[in-house]
Image 1 (cartoon, helix red, strand yellow):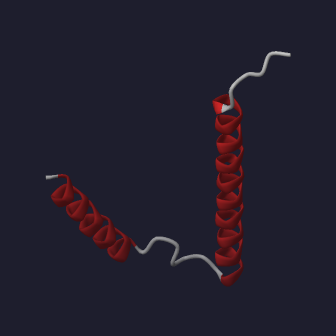
Image 2: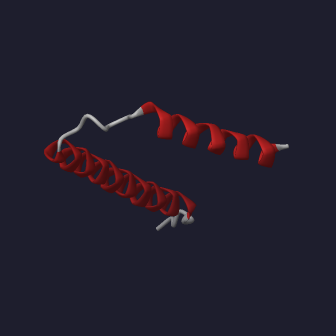
Length: 66
């Protein structure tokens, strides 16, 4: 059932993207700016992911009592 939902969502999203004309009004400079913002968001998410993994690893370490 979940697979059917997932596939129907993918089909609907691709249909809406292809018919909406989204971002077609952007100039070359606008596309470049949009891409740079996308790359920045991805770098931020990767950094947050790394930090989250580090924090989890720190909490998973057993506490040593001296």
